[in-house]
Length: 322
Ligand SMILES: [Zn+2]
Image 1 (tube, rainbow, N blue to C red):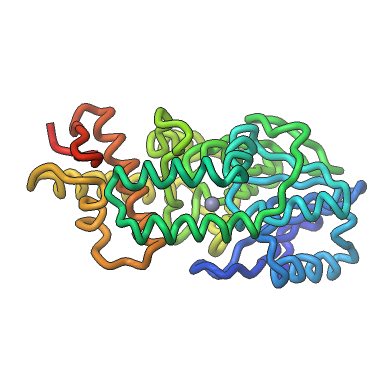
Image 2: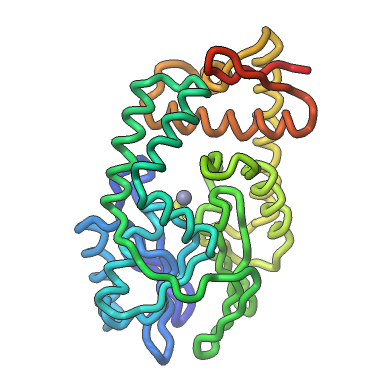
């Protein structure tokens, strides 16, 4: 499905087999070809839908000369390598996320680190095993690609009459970027600001010093007052009021912090036990993993603020109120 946003800018909706069911990518026609902003997964039904959408513009995959990627998740960048192979397109992404995807493509080390980390935080072994399997599925749906020149914060690009600015938005991933058309007041927000849900926040298991929640909240504030007419997220419907949505998301995280602190009032707990108090028990495996990540990033933030402390016993990390 393809929707026109500006005379030369389009939103393309692609299928994906996860719960959200779809991802929006964007295409800009310019004198030199077609620029894609995110590309969807490397699965036949998605790649076919992308080709069909471009065909309605009289274009093909081979006309794509540039690919801009918001972040390294498979639903956003999966088929970039295939497009690059067919069209020779230049692929751009932040250096951070590019490094991360290369780490994930070395599966053994990634899996070992993931197993160690999640076991210490008490995630049940069956969920860890399911996660390892799912990571292999994600890897299969990602075609490797080359990034010659990574995206830098506030870089500017000109395509015909259209000016593009790269807006840094670390949080959901460390190197996430949003794409902003200042003259048109249009923000392609990727997964940074979504209308119905908040993006999952998860630790960088290659860097324990990374603070996802703090980065995410700071990135939200930094874009809150951007002059925007319409936000086009990667999932869900476009929406006009960016500041209102930023405020809702900030309040949501403040409320979650309060609930997590309440869960620790009864005594020390592992991250997994706290996540069960907040998100419930017997969740599907992947939800259990997401719930643990979300809980973890809040606990780390509370620990940084001196409100909770942690210690390790019998190979498990335990948190308690100070
Ligand atoms: Zn994502």
